Image 1 (cartoon, rainbow, N blue to C red):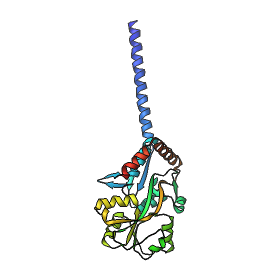
Image 2 (tube, helix red, strand yellow):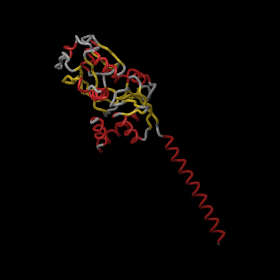
Image 3 (cartoon, rainbow, N blue to C red):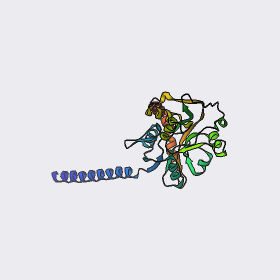
Length: 262
């Protein structure tokens, strides 16, 4: 009887060991199967930026939380904005953020239905500047205007640039350059997303030396835009669902508010 019990216990231990090994293998396999995507973005604090080797910001925090809920691993790289758009359009990466949706971009990119961040665009001048603005963009035609390369500043402003209504356009790849040009008098006004501009003004200690002209040029949401070179619908839908759940449980609002206060 003792021998039978010992044999039974031995076989049971061996069986349990096999089951544990299988369970561990299954968990490892699931972890290994977690999809990894690569996203690119520009350097636009406080939405997305690189600092001391870390990529951070409002949009980055929101995307990382959404990806966690989707069980998707995300690799994010900060590059010049024009390059970010081009790489997503050509399929060199899986997607780009934070992108304003325009008719031209919709032809080449697969946008989420849920916005990733609110994005207001404003005009900024040095305090004491004679520049006047009342919402009529054509009145800015005689001024030197600093803008970011491939960054949409709203349909009305973008169309004014394309049509030649606004001709004195100074294009840069980095918003910091526009701030420096504005303070040096090399441009008369700069156009920038509002949160990002105030972040930079505080960074350079010139918040009291710059004035925002009202009304804003645009107040449009920005999205994650996936490449159309391969099927990203499943990933896009997963992010949409995650963003909906984040807004429903208040996580989205808390993250946005934490950066808006900075």
